[in-house]
Image (tube, rainbow, N blue to C red; front, side, top):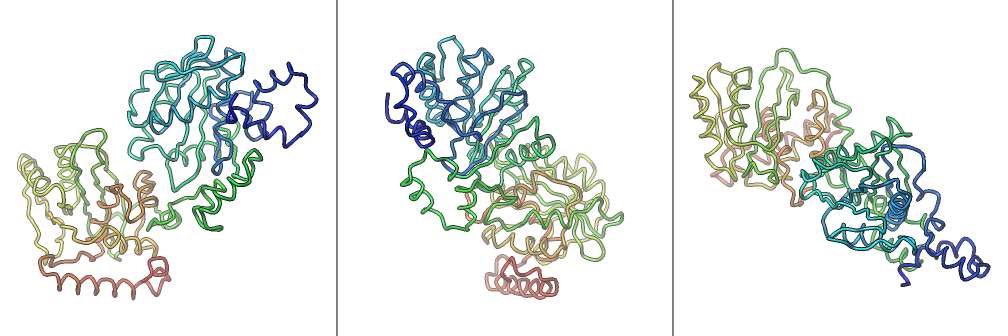
Length: 480
């Protein structure tokens, strides 16, 4: 047996240094095959019935060990005949779940690798899934699912993958899913699980812990790992202490701003309604969503975000939404054309003509007009500034309480509070919102072909916004 296989027994030695000395050889062999004896109470999955059991801890908190031992126990006891394993990638399934199920299986019930998965002596074989193909588990029927490293599941597909695998875990009265994660940033799946625990803690059990709870870790590992983070920093709290926050550390928006200024209804007679559109390059299931957000401005200049239509859709589908909203009460749409070029404008124009409506393009110097029934006004923008610069002013307006979400727009709010400047993820919902809010607030910067004029106009907007926010205390977060 390798050092890695007996590593959990450092814990037993720590609790009772003379334990092995008092055992016969036969007792020691049995003990080494019963790894559950070395678990801390917080690592032990309760034997009572529940729907989900999860562990959120800092790095090295013992999550994988506890859940691997529980899966092995259930398979051996005949409580689990159809298990599923889910990790961020197939490689992580192999390295984390399969490797530990084998390493921590009892000596007289050894699991083994089999056809890319794991097989136990009683013939049970686990099915393997990843969020990279979120629809694969839709037709499955499982009595137990182990979902690992939720924090690293791909943002574009993690909720779909989670919903599919948990729905497919439905065989038998004791069907349940186990999950584990560290914390980093904001994750809608983790937030959902925390909310479920808050709603019904007996059915959705969560165990929390820090890296320091695991007495099996060597002191050198703890010193080296903690040295990577500044004590008191957000990363230290997440990676070492396992704390979960309502938003990402570098996000421009804060959840409290959204919650504090949320409204139940929009004004009955808004001064203007607009759509913001950030087209995607593809409607493929792995593509980014099309950003399409509706916002309104009242007569006092307050802005209300009323709908988030964003999802993966074809140009024909988003053009239909734009036309329907403009036929109802929207004045028009602001389109970011950086990637899609003329295509959004052309498809909207073609479909509008079939409805007997016309499209009128707005140049950079013309203010957005009030709604004219039968006409769709379109302003196209070409973003020459980075996303952080474009989003900073709307974020400051949110902080100042000038922008209100009508109801809850979960996916949009997740993106606002998790997107960090400089990241590779494309924030399509955020971009669409920024287009609409900037236009409604009068913060659109004209004159894109005149660089000096654009810089001067941007400086004027920045100064005006700073002056407006100083009276509300809203400029502190944005550094204005």
